[in-house]
Length: 226
Length: 226
DNA sequence: AGATTGTTCTTCGTATACACTTCGCCTGGA
DNA sequence: TCCAGGCGAAGTGTATACGAAGAACAATCT
Image 1 (cartoon, chains in turn cyan, red, brown, orange):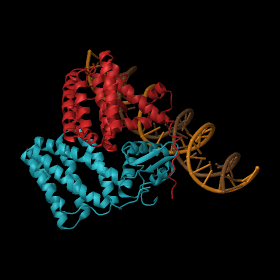
Image 2 (cartoon, rainbow over the protein chains, first blue to last red):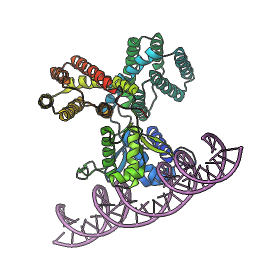
Image 3 (cartoon, chains in turn yellow, blue, cyan, purple):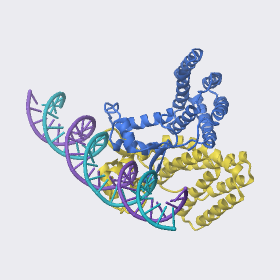
Image 4 (cartoon, rainbow over the protein chains, first blue to last red):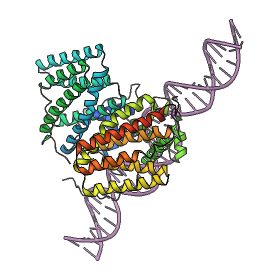
């Protein structure tokens, strides 16, 4: 609840509202604030050690991003990703990541490919070490990197936002996705390296399909709505 | 046990910040505030007749939506859509609207189709009357309706946001797109009615391709960056 | 009980204050 | 004339206080 997040955010150069937004997003994704939980401005202000104004501004953005729902005159509650919308998210993500893969394949420089392989290696190693947390990090890093290589800022920002929500669902649904996804990742990077957009798209779709299946399993009863 | 019988009486009055956001978006899209123009909080507050707080909250959301850029400690300026990002926008939009068309085809009820045909008729009529403004409205309405029929809230909200930006570019680039697009629309609605997702996707892609060509022409020199 | 009326919590908007940055202007010196 | 550097205005970032109105809940009355 209120305990562990109380830090002194008030000393940096970044605007407070951004720090609050970041902390809020993180707390929601990590499950420190659970779906349906009421978020009063005063409480958040106290949790983060700031005044209400930065909190309000952060809340509006969090609403725009879909992490909270604001009911007029009644305040904000943490949004509830229902298993219905998980399917919807993946349907969109599938298309977007397929496009990203294609663009990445068409535009990747040798240096880009090297960077991807590097992530792949680290991921493989972390998998051997059973360091699931690190595996998840590297998984994100790989996807984000591909997005960046795609060179399309719109695609990138939209997909990133979606990706955060996916992670949220994963966390709530407990276990991170297992090691076998790295085989798919290798396929994907191979395709990108080949420069064959079509093939990269297919690899992305295959990967997303598998990821969805996993997410769907986890989503069943991993959290309760309301 | 949290009571779920939400009365919806309070939902009609929208908060000032939302009205400000709406007005701000509209003003930017209409070109009342031009790209690069400085938006000081005091000025906006005065323009809209409210205090700084609602303005600030609206600005944060407008930033998240990509209509303004906020430079820390220096304030907000209207964002500048460069012709590079127009291509990027359409690349994404193509994928999203194709998905929307497919889902709509798979899920449309007869009533949905009737509603689409109604819009088509009105559009045709407005075109005859040379009422370009109304044509543009109906064009939006049609796309938005298809999004709604798709039944995927993520897809819907993301694409809507993108759509606003497209309109922005169109306005800045002067002339609305011409009458011939209605032929494509008819193809699209026919495809949706048929229930053939594949065909609906193809129709959407064809339409988007043509729209992009038009947008691209307009974008050349229709406005100046910075 | 069932309806009505308070009471309280909270949001929403306004207003004000102030530290601190940024920027443009101005002045003085080369 | 041109540059340097100082000075002050403008504007953001943040905090705080306050009043109004809505919603939820409790208490009270018929």
